[in-house]
Amino acid sequence: MSQTILVVDDEPKLLDLVRTILEKEGFAVIEAHNGYEAVERVRNALPDLVLLDVMMPEMDGFEALREIRLASNAPVIMLTVQASEADKVHGLELGADDYVAKPFDHRELVSRVKAMLRRAAMPSTMSKSDDQVRIDDRLDIDFDKREVIVSGKRQKLRPLEHRLLYHLVSNAGKLLSHENLLTKVWGREYRDDEQLLRLYITYLRQKIEPDPSHPRYILNERGLGYRFAEYREPPNPT
Image (tube, rainbow, N blue to C red; front, side):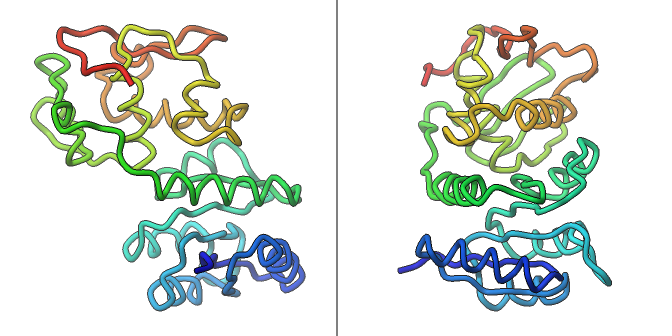
C-alpha cells in the first residue's frame, strides 16, 4: 500500500511540481493550500508524512505545525525560503523533523522524504535492561518513557532527541563523529548535515545541562564530533 504524503503550500505551481515528483516515486499525495486545510487533512486523512510550507497567509506554517502536533506524530518537513538557524530552532521546538530550503533539488527532496519515512518505521534499539539510566544525582534518563528527569522534574523527549541521546549515552566516553551520529539517528542521506546535528545537540543541552553554554554531559570535540561524559554504569554499547 502506498504511503501518503500531505503537501501544504499556497503556490499551485509548487504543489503540482511536488505532486509530480512524489507520485513518480510511488507515493500517494494529498494537498492543502493553507494551514487550516493542513490541520483538517492531518486529522481526517492521517498522512504518513507532511511537507509544510512556512510562509502562508492566514495561518503560517509554524502555527499549523503547532496544531498538527496535537493530532499527529507523523514526520514533518518544513519548506522555506528563509532557512535561518533561528527559524530552524523555532520549528524544531514546535515539533518539525527537518527543513528543506526552496528552491530545492528534486533528488534531495525525495531522499529526505524517504529517510524520514524509514526512520519513522524503525523499531527502538533500546533493550529493556537499559530503559532507566542514572547519570548522577541530578540527571536520570527514562528511555522507556522518553523522558529526562532533571533535579526531580520530568521533561519529555521528542523522537529524534530520544534517538540522539540514546546513541550518545550508549557510547558514553567515546567520541562519535558528526557523520556517525547523523547516519545513526537520521540516516545516510543526512551524514553531511552538521547544522541539523548542532541544532539537536543545542536543544538536548537546553533540557539536560545545568548551564548549556558550559556543558557537563554532552561534550564537543571541535571539528571531530561529540561524546557523552563517562559515568558509573553506562548501558551496553550499540
